[in-house]
Length: 230
Image 1 (spheres, helix red, strand yellow):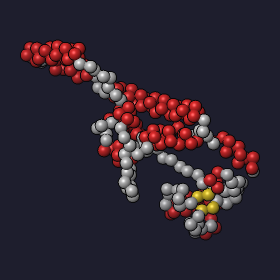
Image 2 (cartoon, helix red, strand yellow):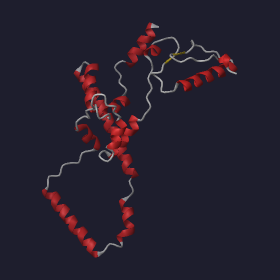
Image 3 (cartoon, rainbow, N blue to C red):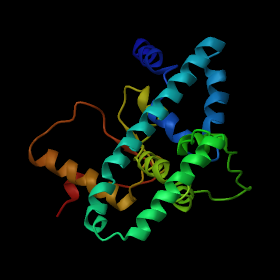
């Protein structure tokens, strides 16, 4: 049993879930600061910590670029939209367009034009959202309110932050016994859990299926035995 626990510990220790890390960056209360802070504690060697942080940065920018390309592919062709009205453009409008184009060319030649920043660059460079004490903060609501400011990044954030996440009790992970299910680690209502477990017991009883492990323990929930079914 001890060797099995050590194998699990060696397998998962030091390996941070990349998707969970990206999700923490997309929380405006934390951004990259949380990753930098905790990675420096997890990876005591400075070079290793920096390498892991660079991996996270590359991953989130790579994911963002994917959403940029997807956004471009969904945009209708401006040329096709203009074909129907191009023949109706008056000579005066053509002259206005020509004059405006000449002005734009001149303005660009005398101005210092800086490359535009992406949504992700702007988001990471801005300060963190400071939540007040006792505030019930919802990251998805924050992104909804800032959709116009971060058009592409908000779509990516909504997709990442809406992924269902499950947790496992440590006693279940490092135990040879049955699975542990309590009210803090299940989003299901007690009635739903009771119905699922009872149905499973009834089916196993009807088809003579025998469990190879010990019985499941469910805290704070009283379940009827399979024999009580009417």
